[in-house]
Image (cartoon, rainbow, N blue to C red; front, side):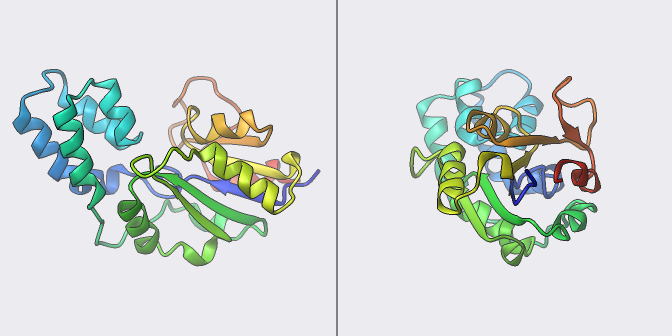
Length: 206
């Protein structure tokens, strides 16, 4: 059955987080450094902040309640105010005729500012921000809602993203098609199917 809908992640799928991450997260990185709480490699924390939600980073590095609260307060109010260039192949995704849904995890203000600066609203039928600081809603819940409301068969929906343990896992659990998007072809080991360029999507859509 042909694919009718694409569910697409935002961070590191439509644009590269490192292109804005250092500047965006600097207020928190400064607090982390000043706290002296984490004695390991700060670079590792910074890399993870550009890859996974803060709540998971805090758990992974065992941040104290105080640091978690400080981080939450800082990040909850952060917005990115400059233009963000998408990946150069994003135009290939834009041109596809399938209905598209953007589903991203993060702080509402921050993610909304990225959507605005990337000028994405008109590219998607719906934009969903899953904010762990506000509710227990998950990407899987949102995916299920989209499939049910639009009456798609599971085989008509393809989930595209860079995180095997987030959107791709949610898609698999619902029986949806999934494709790993990774500019680095060696990322995440031998996970397949995978693409490094949106032009390669066409082979998964028929």
